[in-house]
Image (cartoon, rainbow, N blue to C red; front, side, top):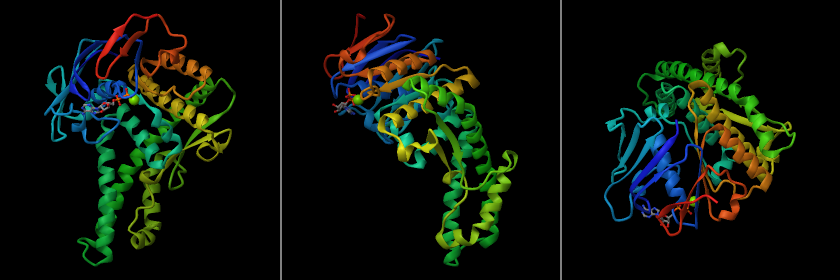
Length: 370
Ligand SMILES: Nc1ncnc2c1ncn2[C@@H]1O[C@H](COP(=O)(O)OP(=O)(O)O)[C@@H](O)[C@H]1O
Ligand SMILES: [Mg+2]
């Protein structure tokens, strides 16, 4: 599903703007601080219910205003509207009817933001990669949202229970710990299984995509790195429970849960070596792209949803060949919004692309192509 148009009302530095988009490429040109990322943020909020910049969504309301909103018109004439309230609350409406769950948005749009920070998915801490895998799982299978949420709650609850056990205040004692462990193993097992399946489904594609971006023969390989050995994919909950039992004394001492998907990671290797430790900046960046594009199109294969890529300043430090390869690749796979500061950055551009120029802050104007 692609985005045909947007309406930004009292959103960031926009007072009231309406834009029509190309189903293929949309290029947004403008100086620093003019509102390019704000525009992408508006689209992203409608597709995911959250911002890629802040948890306090009320920050998106235009300075001095009490509410703001963003609406999208989609390819099939349906609409999504997000009203943002000053207490960071929001109303999400699909065809003017309130959506029950934010995760329902994932069934409508498959939106992927790729910004300058996205290299952190490869370079940064494991928690970012776990988040990325889980987001992708929720997109493929919206029912997994509650499993992921409840799992996180259980791990927290186990921590508090371990603390209380140590101070002798725990209600339920070791028996309740058994109950928690059982539930952690059940839900954790589901999450690990989904992550494994996801990784399996994109492994080849990540490797191919990386080669296509870089134009060389380097081999990028992704594997799931679990906090416990997985011998049988069908018996993951049993394995988690087993290892929770063996780790119990240690867990009681340190108030930790040492086994489970919250301790796992996604390993990315380049030619056999961990890319986080040995890769160059450009290599890590290209690997991040390859993973993000592959994840987005893997859900495409499962649910026939053409992704919408929001690529923010992301070409800035790539060489001309990589830029070109990457643009071609993204276009093949979905609708594409790209921000740049100078039109010279563009290079070759398809005559079908829509170009929007911000000549001053908050005022995008459609420009003739060429
Ligand atoms: N809530 C807001 N209300 C009005 N202006 C805002 C708000 N939030 C950010 N801005 C302004 O938006 C600008 C940043 O826009 P941004 O889209 O990040 O720029 P860029 O074009 O460089 O991507 C800054 O000038 C900032 O002051
Ligand atoms: Mg920006």
